[in-house]
Image 1 (cartoon, rainbow, N blue to C red):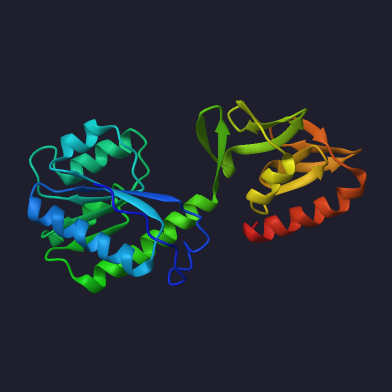
Image 2: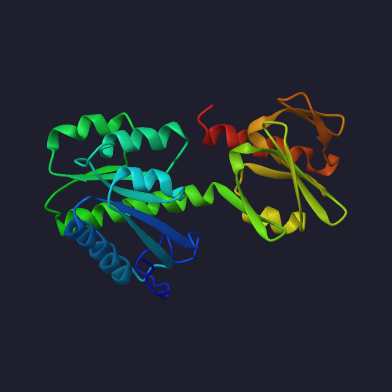
Length: 258
């Protein structure tokens, strides 16, 4: 089910700048009234906070959720269902690399400790308490905003790719294309300008040269106009920016507590 577009408001500061453009939720519960109640709570919360576009997909059992192949920002998951039950569904999701924020909704208090094993975001008890649900949603949207800020989305032809900033070693511009060099050795190119990319990333990426951005987390030194990287590579560094690079490195080390 999809709800209509809502105008951005000022109440939820995490989202007022549109950091998260489309939020996708899944509700998995084998009791239709409960699934409808959850969707209603979500709709009320979103309307109250004037949040951006979002969608809610409903599933009547864990198998349907697993077979959907969908990618969701957050999943509200009942524990007591036919096999696979909620906990097993969560384990299977994690095994295949799903990083959705999982919120268990159940009458079983004793399962709360099991939820830690699947890195659950929260644990709500039935019947739902409105105030408790809103607290969970406040935290959930804040977490999604922080997660979105740690990624960039690049357009490639008619599609797009989400790239975690932590995966970037350095970026270079050649002609009309920007090339992203990643930790696994892969290189992704797209049409764009380095200046535009620089505005979209955080302080971990530093412009060491007019044609290069480098991830400070992978810098091991700078000498003779070159940045030394942890992978053994070297990239150019403007001599005029070497001092700024050293200062940026020191700031980054303090931020990381090193």
